Image 1 (cartoon, rainbow, N blue to C red):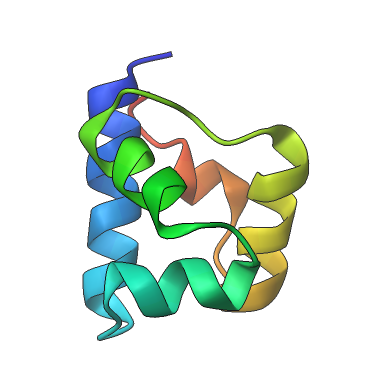
Image 2 (image 1 turned 90 degrees about the vertical axis):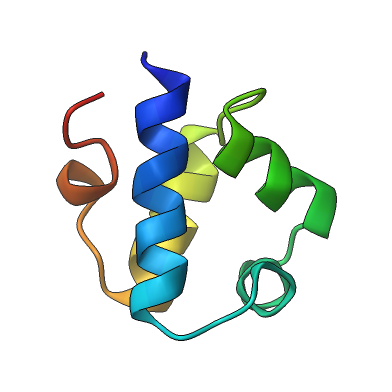
Length: 68
């Protein structure tokens, strides 16, 4: 998995929702460090967390993983 590309997809999602990283992570129930790690490509979320992002924000997992 291309973590940098995934991070860009997450960052684009957060911007399109007009949220801060803190607000985004609060809504999905993770600490803000995780959100920043995803954006910077040092970590990726679990499948369970991808499903939570999909459910909370109505974005497809395919879209989150696009180009990864």
